[in-house]
Image (cartoon, rainbow, N blue to C red; front, top):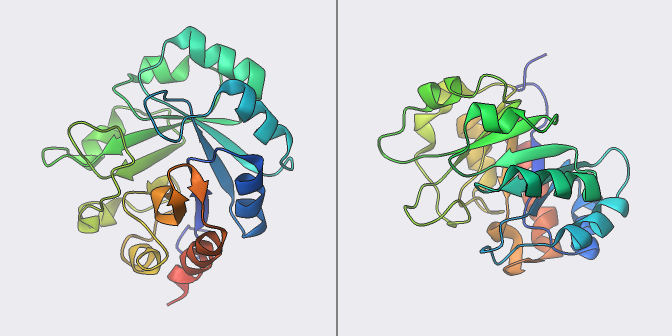
Length: 213
């Protein structure tokens, strides 16, 4: 069965509290993302992240986001939190990403010169590829969209769409790209790191009905 027949999976990223994590799951989120990039306004410490992970059910996917981090820090974070999946948003190599004995997602920022298929091929062991908007001075979290037509031919069970998604445009994005999953952070927030629980519900509902049209 292909992803085009299944409801789109939803990851809510930039979670900073157990309250928001539980609200996301209650609204139907399949995964929650925790940001371990200190410059981010959505950064959480491993101690806080461990409390969030411990407060969720065993079937909720927990994802840790890192940017060009020292391997020892990633390993320490994994040991403390028990994260199930890693997401790398920097310039990490395939060899780097594979060293942690966890499945990983590679984020690919859609700069004008990027060839999406070629970029994916550089990470053959990735379990997913997250396509995000590009901004020279940011590793994600730009709040901007990109031209979805650049990746429509790549749709499959490993494609995750991100970048400027919100409750108003996610259904159209899913219809256009038919990704396996969508990823949102700022588009469902009251402020950086603080989720809007009504927006969470609206976003997840729209994303999961997006393929039915």
